[in-house]
Image 1 (cartoon, rainbow, N blue to C red):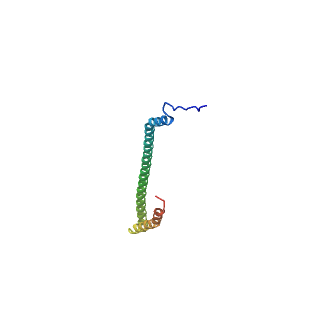
Image 2 (image 1 turned 135 degrees about the horizontal axis):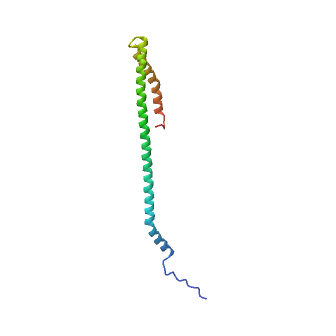
Length: 123
């Protein structure tokens, strides 16, 4: 008996069909990936803008609070100065006492502020 002969397929092979299918799907896949990347970049951009806006608002509020604190400290120093001058009946005593108190407070607070900035990993 003679062995049976296997005839080659007349149509496209499995590999050729897969390559054709891949070639047809590739532009669609690339477009979908580009759209996904564009959406992710847009999301990151919006998140960064939101964070920057939040930081700017916090900085503005902190600046305004610092300004109000400074104005309050000036008025407090003036009222203490006037009060001490009236009680001591010497016009120079009030400003002297208020100035010494302000210098003492600044001397105590300066190292704390400097140490706060010197810590590593702190912005």
